[in-house]
Length: 342
Image 1: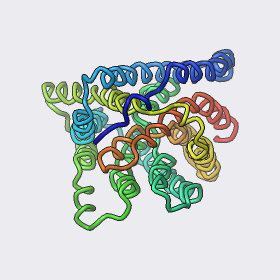
Image 2 (image 1 turned 60 degrees about the horizontal axis):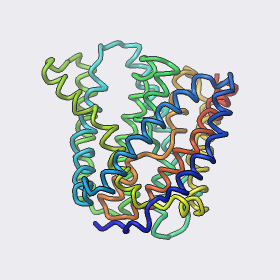
Image 3 (image 1 turned 45 degrees about the vertical axis):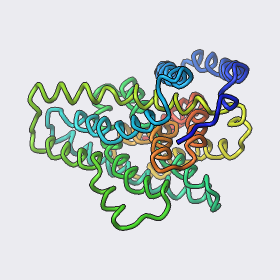
Image 4 (image 1 turned 45 degrees about the horizontal axis):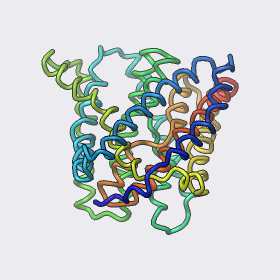
């Protein structure tokens, strides 16, 4: 895998323009009392994400992480770190009411993905090479890194538990439909490999352990926890290595990226919200799924694009722009939820 040379990297002027363009927005969000909690949680997470991406950016610039090493790291995240994070999420005390709420959240999450897939088909109709990246970006959100802290800030630990229903649906979908979307047509043997992926296996094991009220021994639980904690920093550093060669100005001029972001950050969550108004269940559970759906594009997108030799630079541009634009759209979606979802 060969990345473009330094003439394609983000310039200092581009970085300055990016910061200037979002500064008024950040000031406005912090001043609005109606969205007092949401902006601060979002800004904290985006700040952490930006710093981690910068570390990856610098590691690539000084050749600390090579292209080959970055490729290996992406495989490590997919096959080892992600499964550990899933197993850790289900290591909690069993409760029947929580199990019911978790099942409801899972059902709502699956429905939200069906609606997102329909929207992606309407917004990305062409047969161009980038269409698969756009469809993936519209359907799948950064529900782990952005979703967990957002939900925790709004609904506490119970909200995070119910969010695992969405995360379970995400993992089931992203390693089946998501991989198929990025790869195009796949053979039966490829589907078998996807269904036997470590992530799906970890999801099934986690559910069984939760329902059967089985816990890991302390040593194993601690080890799994340490590995799971690597998810965010490694994923963001991998992103930073990729962003090293991303031309931010070029990304800003690409109208297709804004179309993709509009579908991901506005059309999909608003469509999900509209459908959810006709479903009689807990407003909190519906809000959790809607907020997770409204998060920016999943970091998994360019990891899969790298793994399957697709246009990971384009995926990285969508990821970067959608993260910045979500600073405005997430509070908006939350405000609409408060008025519509009951």
